[in-house]
Image (cartoon, rainbow over all chains, first blue to last red; front, top):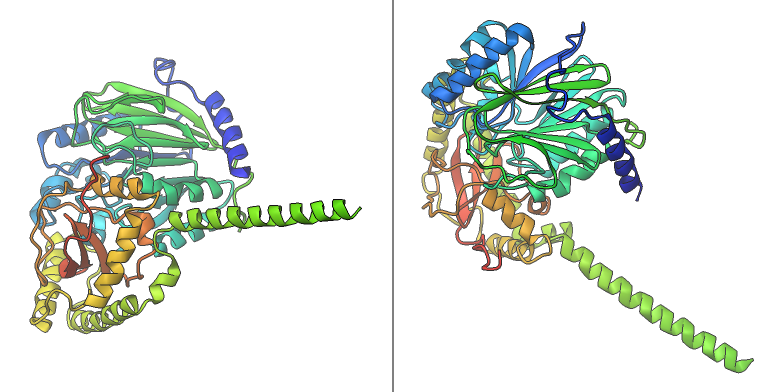
Length: 293
Length: 206
């Protein structure tokens, strides 16, 4: 009951505070505030094919106007197995310019990834298949949604509990808890376990991949969900927009750019050709009922 | 007055009986939500399984101890070489390993029961959806000591099911491949054992 009330309040507040996509597309601008947290999100990119390269080229272009510092990877980082050739062709080469520019990548594992990727230094996983890191006032939690065993759940709860209530809490992993895409649909079994934890500990935003489309979900129980699984792969026309879809894009590859400045999260979703297909501002939800340490 | 007392007493018994029925029904439903309760993990078959896992873990650690420790590296060849060397040594150390060594007959029975319950519970559609999220249920012929086929993407073990199976050390994980439940050494990417045909096919209603 408490959970429902909190969700309702946050959901309504969130809906009111959210600027509808493209409604202000011409007006949307990243504030580029000093000390803000700026990053990009890519998913299902590790094909090694030309669209992956073209998308990463577009990221380089966008970085000139929006200097992001790091990239979160939403899984399926390498489709071609885990030979050294695959690491080169599907990651090191397409993202060379960004890597050379000092951009850090933080990976999560998808269903096409091998667990040994966690030892690949440029993925910054430090040998763990789930981990957390902090940037400014944002706490990131990279999860392994391939294998949500009791140990990982315990770890997540402890990590979220120890994170400050005044911080943004962002989770990213491969399988989307909510999705309107045709191929796989939502990971409902995973949702049964994760969503109550997200609500209890005040997770603000969740990024996932797996579906080869872009979709922004209307806030669910007060939490914002994004799927970005089209940074290399694409399932053209694969999005079956539903009542939970706030916006989507399924006709070309895309990636997300995000800036978190104090209590606001600004985001833009950009296509391979540089078209802005979604944008908006999210106000950080207040998690007054989040568990206290 | 006595009539009132009798009526009150009857009402009390009726209400108590009603509450017991409600409690029993709710209890059954609640149990239905949890495919295999933790109490099942004490079953002799699961105990035997856990002992075999521990025995394997000792072997894994002793073999891995002979290799240079793998640290994060920018050289993927080192990662691949370590994994291959570990797999080769483990394969040699248990050259006689066969299906049923870890998933013993008694353990297999317990797993079959747990999975059967899970796939008939109210949560079964979610569990089935999880498996559908991964690879298609195409036929893959597994062998013990075989490298996990690189062409086969991981299929998540339904997370709610995973909460109620015997816990595994970090070096080992459950996998679903086609209709088989597989025990995988994740560091060596090696199939340790499997129970064939234990994952039910999609029911016609789904």
